[in-house]
Image 1 (cartoon, rainbow, N blue to C red):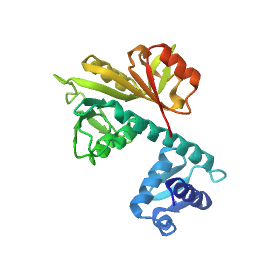
Image 2 (spheres, rainbow, N blue to C red):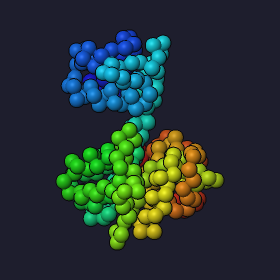
Image 3 (cartoon, one colour):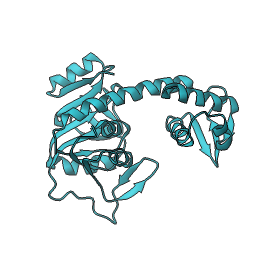
Image 4 (tube, helix red, strand yellow):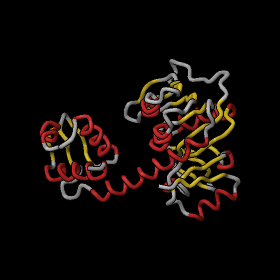
Length: 256
């Protein structure tokens, strides 16, 4: 059974039960406990279920939103395609800073086992993904760990400066990308730190699925003119791509 069908079946079990214990769910789930935990984490992350005191609760007993599962899976496939396309923009032995986020995570996962790079990151998931790549040296930022957002945050108690580090590429996800409003993020912290390291970077690669184009989020970071490459998926509007290219941005369309 593929991942999509497995997760859909799991969601249907939870929908019918309304509330179910992890133990009872494990008895009805025909896969390993670790796979069950990953699938539950996925359903939690997209807002389909809640997990409280060892019990799994459907957020709505009337409609669990299985169409949301299908839509989210489609978007995940877009991000995986973007990850595969982005890896080829790095040359052997180059240094990259990879931001935290679901799309940048797919970039980390897509690196070949033979890829040889130095990677700095603030993403815990990125660290875990790169841990399986023996030829990639991974460096974490110093800071406090935010487990809910899976990131390392700046802290007044430790230094997060990048003295004497030359970065070939910043690979970053965004909350929104707009000609009029530029690059936007969800929070000030991400924008503040990236602004500090841009002068040490040769090239900025933005990885953004089609839902982020012509979208504006909370915090303005910079104009789109700083972007060297935009890697997006094949569902992106041709008009949005044309506009980005007219601004001198090289656009790569990742085929699913």
